[in-house]
Structures are given as C-alpha cells and as structure tokens.
Length: 387
Image 1 (cartoon, helix red, strand yellow):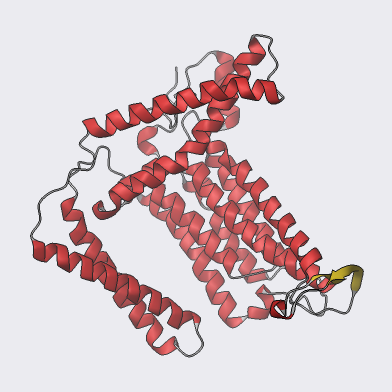
Image 2 (image 1 turned 60 degrees about the horizontal axis):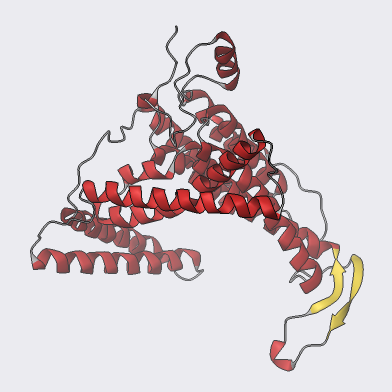
C-alpha cells in the first residue's frame, strides 16, 4: 500500500486560500471587461477543480456559480423593467410606462429599453457574480472553521459564532442528501411535498442533536472564559479599537474621494496600526490554547502571494490604462482582452501547481485506488479530511 501524497498535516492554512481568493476578488472589482472577468472565473474554477477535497463543504463552489448566474439574471431583469442610467440610441423594445408621482422623480417603470443599458447591466452583474464566485472558491478550498486558528484572540468568540452560522447550511444540505438517498434505497419517493415533509423532521432532529453536542463540547473546552486584566488596559483597548476603526473608515473615504488623496493613506495606515494594537491588547482577555496551529510554509506564502500579486497588478493596470479595463457601453463596442492584465490574471493559476494535492491525490488517482481496493485517507462522513 502506497502512502498518499498529501496528508492532513500538509494542508495549506485557510488564510492562504482566503488571501488568494480575496486577491482575485479585488482584481474583479477593478474591471468591467467581460473577457477579463470570465478569465478570473476560469482561473478560480481551475484551481478549485485541481485542489479541492471530497468533503461535503468543498462542493459549495457550484452553488456560488449558480448564485452568480442568478445575480446576472436579476440585474438584467431590473435593467429591462426599471431602466438603466446609461442613455442609449439603439432601442430594443418600448414597454408601457407606469406614471409615478413627482416625489419619485428619476425612477421609472417601463419605457424605452436600449441595448446600451442592457450591456451596461450585463457588465455590472458579471462583476458582482465574479466577486461571489471568488468567495465561493475560498469556501470550497478552505473550511471556515480553520480560519479560527488565524483570528486574533479578541475576535475568537465572534469568529466561532460566524463559523457556526456559515457551516449550518452545508450540514443541512448534507443531511437532506443523506436522508433522500436512504429513502431511495428503501424504495420510497424522495421528491415532492410529502417526501419533503417526511425528511424535514429527521433533519431538524439532527440539527438539534448537533447543537447540543456543540454546546457540550464548547463548555468542556472552557469556551467563554476570560482572564482578569487591569481597568487601564481595558480602556486603552477600547480607545485604540474604536479610534482605529474610525481612522480606517476616514482613510478609506479619503482614498476613494477625489479631494482626500493627501490625507487618506496616512490616516488609513494610522487607523490600521491603532486597530491592530487594540486587537492585540484585547486578546489578553482570551484564555485559550492552540491545537495544531496553522503553519505558514513556502507553499502557503506562494499561494497567498499569487492572489495579492493579481490584485496589485490589476490595480496598477487600472491606474495607467483605465479604458482598457472598462469597455464603454456608449457607444456599443466589442470588448477586447488587454494583454498585460490578462497575463497578470494568469498568475492566479500558481496554486494549482504549488499547493499540495488533497488527501488521496487527484480524482483519477482516487478512482483508480478505489478500483484496486486501496485505502484512501479521506473519511466521507467527516467535515474535513482526517489525518
């Protein structure tokens, strides 16, 4: 029996995958070119197909792709019936317009539908869909629970609540699929309203049992306990955190505005430093131990750096050639794939080659190993690959 090429100990930190995905999402927010956005979706999909595991939560990428398609459809429907802020000369159809009162000036229902307005809505919806798909890639490659190991102590309890909320839906879907499969094996119908009502009670019962087990496990591990710190430290923590967050908001507003470029960056950096200092001091109240802390190796830094590089290169390209990244809807022109921004997006493919393979190798190796009767180091009932 040959050992698998990747084990639980070689898994990349969840923060590396999230930095990579957020880098792609940042690049998507800097362009409306449908060709570049499609290239970003292709890069994210290729990496997910090459490096995701067989865990149930790893199948969430397809759901995010479907959600992105729904977003595009909704954006087009709104532009069709409610109009678009982009004026156009190519009229597709003229709908009956509903008269509105004077206080609703600027809003219309129906009227003239132009090709330019629909193209603008398509570009806008495609950008938002790409952002969602990049987030879905991070969810498929890194379980949200593993992000808790990277959170500062001051945010640990909030992070636990967020992770429990995020993992509820995948677990619910997995329970429904398991119960439907059991009904099919027993020769019972698994579709329709009667079958759904019969499946609903076991699903709710399983969710309640998981909640009780989770509460018992958290209580046994001392969740919620805090250490005593001096009052001066608590006040300093509050001042640094609130002041830092206000500085980050003001600095971001200065960077986005046209007249605040001089003070925006220094204020943003000062706010980040103050907020990090407040989080560090606030972490002194959190008493917890780390089991299997996330270790950042060369591969993790390469994965995270590839996403950051894509974002940085796209921001730089947007500064020197904004027209290439934002094809105009008026007049109607065919989008063109700019060369250097496209090459910078391809840097995001690096994790497909440097990241460790999931437990059991790729899909072909897993299929072949099951055919030969070899043991594969993946527990299909677990939420994460087992060591």
